Length: 104
Image (cartoon, rainbow, N blue to C red):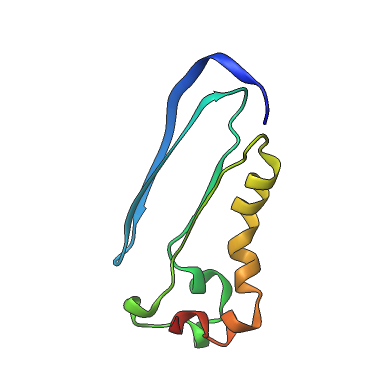
């Protein structure tokens, strides 16, 4: 699973944000691992970044937000890739462009 330190790294990296619908906070701590292995993604308005204005909901309550937390489990490469790409991959699917996900 990877090497560990003799003492945990307890300093935290935190962030927060909000829009008219959502208030969020996120915090990450390395802990006993030799390096930070985890990643996260926050996209408050997923459609605004990936749909043209004609398909973007004007009603804030119909907008989609994306929150992802990715645990590295012995390395950071997959977690970092997921944090940078999972939400983009979702928006490239036909179901997203057709609005199917917003009806779930």
